[in-house]
Image (cartoon, rainbow, N blue to C red; front, side, top):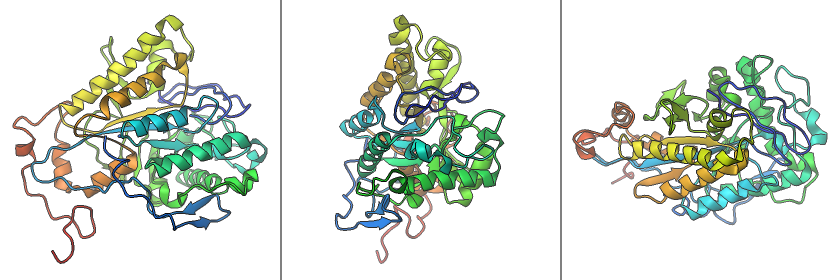
Length: 421
């Protein structure tokens, strides 16, 4: 089963792809790789701006448009969460980052953008990157140039202010047995994570764009989750991530069931959904659909582009309704800002956003928002939700299924009664 790998930036050409649980691609100049949410939160205080370090980032107060997570009431039907996420997110000549920001806003959605740290590092400063098990300045997805960094920073800034989440896809995107992330130790993962943060926190110094506006968040606090390159190295990454205060991981493959914690982190893995025309199911990722349609050829038969896009769209929609009308498990998807097979997968994802994010009881959200909601629930309620199988709705209805009296919310947890009341 193939999944995701990232692409080259600037004039760099990505290394050849190894298809395992994740794929890779060659890209053009620039960086690569829901319904209630953004309109509900209060804007951040305009007067709070505190530059951090060299001014590449800043504390600007609470993130705008971040809804407060509420605990389910007894007998209440859970909302249908849908997560759209992007690996190696950045803005290049295709302008797909800015395009999907617009799509999100128009459809009451927020998303998670997994930024690759090397997309914040200019080519001439490549030796600042010291990848585990590789020589300094090595990256299988290249680096960026000043314009690409400026464009990416603009999109990251606007995305965060609109309530979206900025995660990480780490740096050099090394896959396979020869120094790939699957061979990295816990300490090597810590080094990779530290460097991913550092490139975000020092992009002004590394580009010389000292007069540019900062990113409006403290990345040390903003960064709470990730997806590993090629979905490899999850075991040691999760150990490192837990020690560094991460809250979730999305590097695995799962069925459409309610999430649980794994190694102290919420396991918010992508899922398997129906694959129209096939007897087997398909991972909710554009790269996987492509590999099972045109192989590693990123531009296959143009006569099949529409059909392939429809297959992806219909598979995701089938998966959505299986949950929406069934166990209400969150639907989790991962994609890339790519124009594979004529951009058919981008059109499919956009149409899914438009079709599902405006439905009743649907919340198209970031991983952060999903994790916030899960943390706010009574553990007994979540445990009961996890007894529902794929597509299984409670036989006697939701009111009966969740009619028990949940334990009081711990003090300070969303949904807890106010002190003195």
